Image 1 (spheres, rainbow, N blue to C red):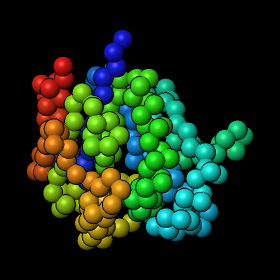
Image 2 (cartoon, rainbow, N blue to C red):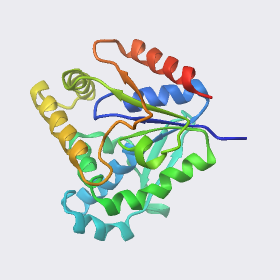
Image 3 (cartoon, rainbow, N blue to C red):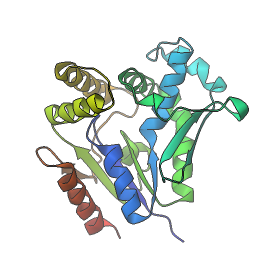
Image 4 (cartoon, helix red, strand yellow):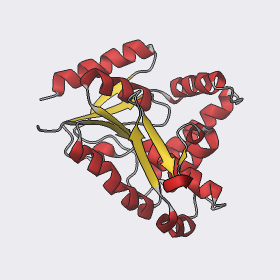
Amino acid sequence: MEHKSIAIDGPSGAGKSTMAKRLARELGFIYVDTGAIYRTLGLFALSRGVDPSDGEGVKALLPAVSISMNYGSDGLQHMYLGGGVDREDVTESIRTPEVSDAASKVSAIPAVRDFLMDMQREMAKKHSVVMDGRDIGTVVLPKADVKIFLTASPEERARRRYAELKQRGIVETYETVLADIEERDARDSGRAAAPLKQAQDALRVDTTGISMEESFQLLLQTVQEHMV
């Protein structure tokens, strides 16, 4: 059976994970959240007292880190740190603003991207996948069957992220969330290693001003129209 791959890139807060999970279920594909992989490494750096922006410090941690993933009965990707009896499910703990910021910083380190690249590509070799991140269509899966650049205005993304954090009991102001998103956009787009950008052959899906359901239907229609 020939495996298919769908690459979904876009800025922080664009709804990539939510949309990609649902798209994978709709198509019967495996969902690969590459951002969760970087978040897990970011969490590891924080737990070891290493500044996530310290390239040499993070690089020195790589031989000691053990990151794995599997899929539960709910079909969702679970992330683990460590191995054997010490393996810890960090699926929930990687979703804090602090870890999100750490993930953005470690992902700018070339050695980190090289270290995690094989894990991501191996999934696409074994399964039909929907994979989301910052450089899936440009670097990780440059030959993906369909490439999507999913985006929305910074203000729209900040409103969504603010509502999500509030629902999870994390107290942040809208202004702080917006500032964080704008800072991360600048960092992700300006980094030397695999910067966030729309692949030349990617299809742009802008969800500014429409509901989550309308956004998903637009994404699904776009993929179905271009999937060979």
